[in-house]
Length: 307
Ligand code: G3H
Ligand code: 13P
Ligand code: ZN
Image (cartoon, rainbow, N blue to C red; front, top):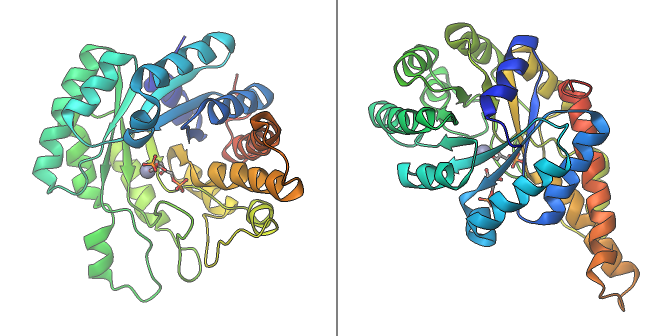
């Protein structure tokens, strides 16, 4: 049975580890996530974006998640809406069977973000569903960024404290220098860990790291070796992920790594045997590569062995 995000993340918050929140857009990605959780004995959050919901249909997203949660009944798992953009989107997810939602109103002014988040929290909590919100803008911080520029982009700890107290939100995603996709840093990777620690101390709730893909060298290489192009790509190093977990991150959003690992194997089969057109011959090694990346991540984040 799917459990609420709170059930998984309150434990991680108390014990100081990170839980991977893995995106899926089809059965193969979902299956790989569950196989990894089973192998690493780890709780999981499975998440679908509005784009994934449009692609699959919300009944399919929830239906597949429920079937897999039942098949792997020993694994604590929450189904989370990633980057919900409106109250209606969150309401539809909750009414359809999601057990956790994100309302992403971080591009609105503070007061509007607070108002919209509070409205989602009131509805979600009446149904036993947890809520994530975001403060600040997701973007990399350059070496030469000024203090003022940094303050304008990244989360403000004073605002974080007020936001959490007033909205009663369950989890907060603080912008500390990560961004989505494969191109996170122009120079050396850089995150504002001091700011993260300050936000944790002031809010004392589970925090969420978006844009947390690492693009490990072997994953990049698997894609490049098939003729793929990832010029200029850079992820969050494992050591940074661990530092972030130490600083209070408990939910670690990961999508790009899974896509690259999966598609590298699809490309490889296509390159190796141009006559191949049996889907299963492409997807079986692709799921296997993804499973490996995910179970390794569970060990890096400390969620492995927690069930
Ligand atoms: O944060 C975004 C996730 O990686 C989902 O991306 O909107 O392309 O499904 P998507
Ligand atoms: P990545 O693009 O780093 O995998 O981040 C995914 C994410 O934040 C989903 O919300
Ligand atoms: Zn995100």
